[in-house]
Image (cartoon, rainbow, N blue to C red; front, side, top):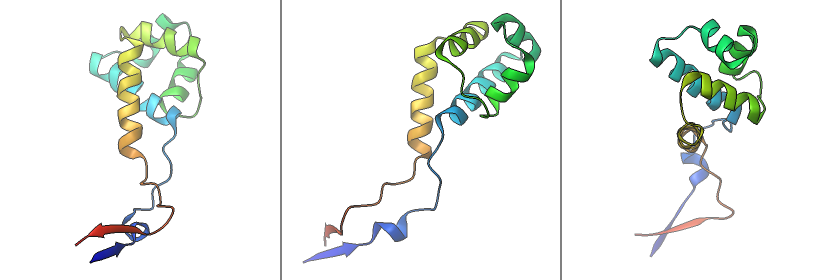
Length: 106
């Protein structure tokens, strides 16, 4: 016989992760790992330190050109950054509620 499992109850109440927040966390982590100051990366990327700070805090959603400038200033490859962010978003994403009861074999 099969048991009905209510995945809604197992699911943690987490909001959907925002891509811009994961982008900001990843950029900040890369900058700090290198030991660079925010003002130095901002200058090399051609953006203001305030703007870069807002990107790192997930407050701004930069254009693809801005992301390329910032990753270039950090010396990181854009595909590597995108793979990291995709993994972070996947781990942070809430479990999608089932469309109906899920049957599990006993």
